[in-house]
Length: 295
Image (cartoon, rainbow, N blue to C red; front, side, top):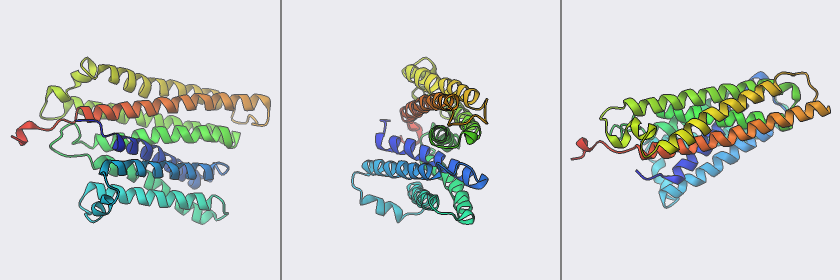
């Protein structure tokens, strides 16, 4: 199956935006990241908006989206409603970030947490279909969720290091490390599903990834760029920025430390994006249908 680039771009952007929303929710519930919560919420909103725009190119005509919304049995309908809900929550978070309503901010934070988890799951679930064995597994929506949390958490931690309080950087870095770990676990789980999916066929076999026509993409894009480098870079960021939590950002040493930490995170984010894009191209490449159900 050919790569559907509008949907691929949509899934990467919505994943990153969803991860940011979850981070915003964590911050609001814990009462932290106050300096950057507006930037985080606004960035999430922008990512969701651009992702939604990208998805319309797959429809051919934007007005077709209204026909999809009329069928609630469709996975695409649930996905669009999830995007709208997440966008509204991101906007509310950005507005409340400029106000001082702790109770309302906490409620919206909980909604952000829910929206950030539900959206990638809904987007991934819309691809599940028995006719395409490589897609017909819960590991697919979980992979969408995990890679989104990885990208969103790392982006958020980088913004905290650049714009937030130095004392909050260690917590943000720990959350980023958790995000990368979730990304790795869910990616490995989805690759394992490709290996053990029913109705085995060479076009969707694990051998195609390990040593076949998709080996370069798999080893270079998924394993190295999407797994190994982010794990190492975020680990270095945690070691660098989390070793001195009381270090003042105003001091020369503190500013240098946070700048270096943010540098690790930006590179890690770039690697995660590359890994997510490449994994999705592989997802489309192995999405061959079950011939026995057609002929």
